[in-house]
Image: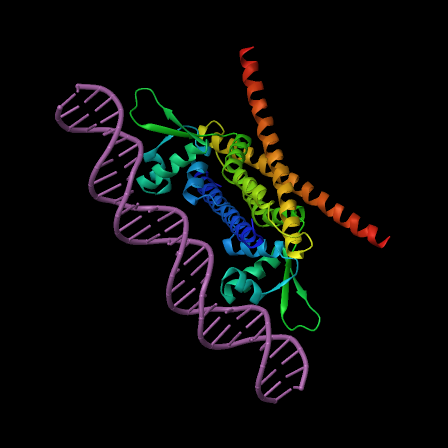
Length: 168
Length: 168
DNA sequence: TCATTCTTTCAATTACTTTTGAAAGTTCAG
DNA sequence: CTGAACTTTCAAAAGTAATTGAAAGAATGA
């Protein structure tokens, strides 16, 4: 398979994967493109490679930066901004995990805690079934929260550990 | 908080969580409703509780059954079909993991394996960057695949172990 | 068999999301 | 300052997904 073809296929595959996970297609495609390019790209480059508009490019690049998956790179003597993606997929995974935990899991846990306090007679089977379900889900949410935190933590200490060694 | 209010809030929260994870809102809401109800509900009941149409109800219930999250329950002497949800959230999580692995991860691994075989000179930095990225992602995908399989496996053996004890 | 009750399908509609591109905004060298 | 190079915004348009409800299809039992 030729590089150009492989590239196109990778971008398209990553794009539809993203879509299935509730990440917009263009965002995933820009991320894919930046991951496989050796050097940073400008907004123009991205527009040309993916055939998308300026606004779309800007918006999605901004969002990727927000998620911590892409960074702005300034090339000395150039006016344009360039962008490059994190290439270590483990780092990508922890960043996504951290971000989704913050945006989605934390609020859910808050709500579940409130729902625990539903009034009513425990002998009423509707009340009982509700309490049981919420308790069950709440336990699960807390367990998941702990697991994600550990995952993020372990990656962080690996990162700082490695960084530290460089200066030792 | 009153039960009715808590119920409504739980259904709505679960619904928007689903939407964020690429599961359609109605499907998640039906699942939530069935989880907190002590007894199975009919299609009519679901329509009334969630204010949705017959077609919508049918379609999403069918999909939930497909995912293994909901089952048809026949009540003796009744013509209608009733539905009830799995209430053990760990079982729900493994079922979802299994289903998504099958639908999403397995095809991605297949594609990545193909993309490994891109032609070209290793000294070309574009070729090198591409190969490196794919290799990296491929390793990650395999690791994830193994982790999910282990997770599913452990839950299964727990399930069959428990089941076996009942007949021993 | 037929009438009844329930389930499934699907084309049309409605609601939601993404994308575009022109215009406004910003930055900076000269 | 000024204007060229670049970035950001945003309202309109295009694209996608969910929902409805009426009609067709199955199953049941008298």
